[in-house]
Structure formats: C-alpha cells, structure tokens
Image (cartoon, rainbow, N blue to C red; front, side, top):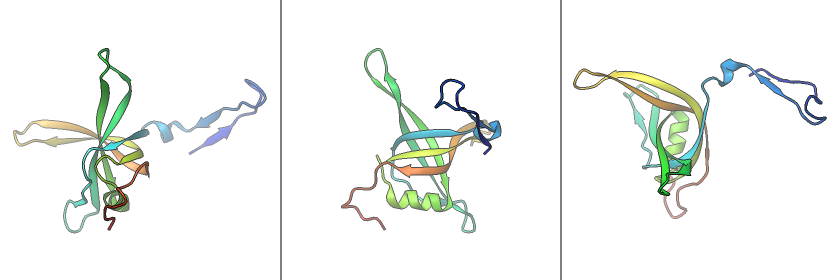
Length: 138
C-alpha cells in the first residue's frame, strides 16, 4: 500500500492527509457482527484446502419507523488456518470483526438456471467474543 503523508498545516498545524493507492482499497469490506450458527470445517475433497462458511448478522445503525431493528445477513468464507481457528474458538452468537473483499461467483442450479452469489472472502478477523468458558475448546 502506498501511503504518503503530506505537509502539515493545510487545515491546521496538526493536520495531514494520506494518499493511498486506489487498487489497494477498491474492494475492501470491514464488518462486525454475530455468527448465526456454529461454524463447521469443510473441504471440497481430501486434497484441497479446508474452509468454512459463516453467516454474519450485522445490525444496521437505524431502526424502521415502527422501531424494529434491521439486520443484514452476510455470507463470509474463511480458508485454511483462518477457518480452523474460527471453527475451534467461535460458536453461534460469537461476535467477530472481519476484513476482506467482496467476491461474486456464478453457478448453475439444479434447474439449469445461472445464479449469482456474493460473499466476503475474509483476509483478517478479530474475535470480539469467544465460546463460553465452560464449553470445550479442542
């Protein structure tokens, strides 16, 4: 990532601006939410890298006119060691922060129709809560 700090003093003596290469930030997503069900480790076949798919419930910052909370359900994919760690230490309702990129896949369903699915491929994550202490972690 190209970061250039410009000379202080444009806005005030303590201000500065940061220039970042657009290719570094064009497809970047940061989410904080709760996992909707216990993560499970998977593999496409015995020779492939392991992965897990989780659904992240992310609260919207506002309520409807009737006072109802709005939630978005966002699919997240984690690969390799990241998947193993999430499956070992997190559970349903665990809170997690995820940084990644949006990826769209095309597939054909059983009726032969082309379907599109968008999901976040996680590059980084941070636990905001863990499994309950009385639960087994391994």
